[in-house]
Amino acid sequence: MVSHLPEKTLNSSGPRQPTASGSATPSNEFTMINVLVSKTEHDRDKVLIEAAVADAFTLHWVDFTDAENIPQSVLAEADAIVGRVNLTDAQYALAPKLKLVQTLKAGYEMIDVNRAQRHGVAVSNNGGANAISVAEHVLMVMLALYRQLLFHHNSVAQGPWENRKLQNRELHGKTLGIIGMGHIGQALAERAQALGMNISYFDVVRKEGLEQERGYRFQMLPKLLANSDIVSVHVPLTDYTRNLINRRTLKMMRPDALLINAARGGVQDEAALHEALTCGWIAGAGLDVFQTEPLPESSPLCVLTNVVLTPHSAPALETYPRAMQHALGNLQRLDQGVPLVNLVVDHETNTQTFLQHHPDADLGSLNHRA
Image 1 (spheres, helix red, strand yellow):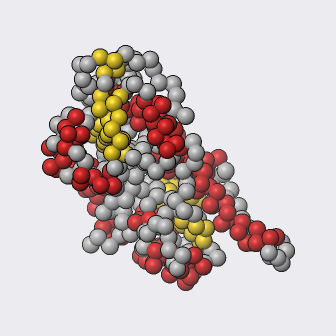
Image 2 (cartoon, one colour):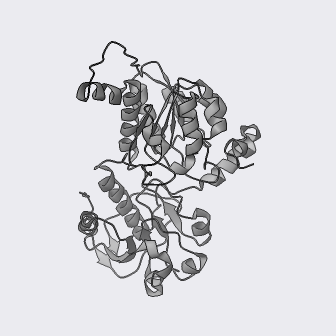
């Protein structure tokens, strides 16, 4: 349950403009701002949101799956949107008061960030609300694969009892290569290092502070793929990351390596991944995301014995209240005119800047853009 909201005093002066500097802590005075909220599938979520917001904001529940038909009158009064919706230029023009699109998810591929910014609208994701949950999920899958959990479960539940041909492996001393060192990547690195793993990473925004403080190693993508025992993917889905895991990059990995993807299904070419898993290019994979969800039961991935498949279930029960707390905090900041937090900096812009300084990185041809 979302809690710890400050006492609220309402007035009718309207929301103030968010500032670029100053304190990021909202005060305890509120105006009544209009917030469009995505209709959710679960009544529990709606009750949670309404209880947390109380009388701080005016909520309008909108079906964002039919975004083209959001009433103009609702857009005209909207100060903020909570949920993933990709407004058109015409819709932004109808929403002169709109200042924030706040998603409760880590991914923001549904939102054209550049378009929003052109209209003076900030975009914020969930501020790492799911980082702990996803990091724990990835560790679970890594251990399940290294310790052959499914095989051993079946040997007990279905027989025959088998404990003499153990091929179990330890995580300790192995190298984990993390592609994408954002909130989730950092949460995973911290926990994996505590288990004695060596941490390498690739990101278009280098984390030199973490390298110095925690001993992480930055490596360009081909070197990371070649040197890692386990590769875990934690990047947003963009033109630069779509199909980043393909025949070429999979062949860069070691034959005893594992691939984990708990980011977005579009990052992986599943036909190439199936080939890699059946031809011995890599030893195994743990997948929580797929190009098509739900994954069809006819998918050839479903019959492989060297994979662990989960139904996009890495987030945990604790994730949603944490995401709501972050969203409400940003709504308060918007209302008070103090700086918003966890604003999305367009990943493609970061990638382009990275490539200007590292033209040899060749990300374009790695994911078949060229």
